[in-house]
Image (cartoon, rainbow, N blue to C red):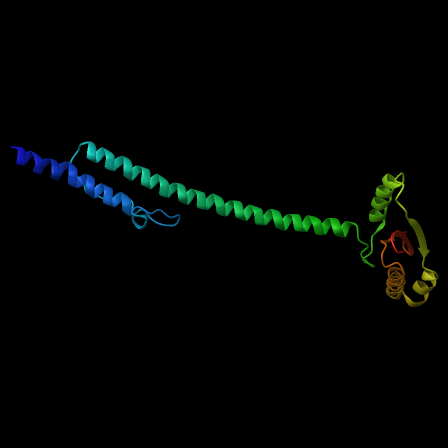
Length: 190
């Protein structure tokens, strides 16, 4: 009876537990694998005892882990996609903001940029170390160039004059505040 009991316990308890342990050690989940590829339990247990309950609980745990890894992968991809979209939109917003303060024809600051700079400077005027000067430049004979040669040539004339102003005042911001009017805020070496 004792030998029969040992054989019965070995066959119905010890062997299934050893088999279950070996299968558990084989489990290696990854985010794109199927249950079988990840090594989820797949044992044919015929008994309806505690060993079967342990197997069912372990199998359920493994499948949940694999499903969770897949969900995390989807969430991570969505997060990365959202981050990329935010970076693209931030770049576009930065470009739109930059363009909003740039004169289209001359590519120097426009009147809005000048007004912003003037507001910033107003805050700094009380500082003892803050030194600046303002230069107003008006392009002479623009009306004559436009009337005689056309507006396309007038635009070329404005660009050329702007280039001269920018070369003279290399260290200071230049703003086009009107059709033929420029303002330069002199700072530093200028």
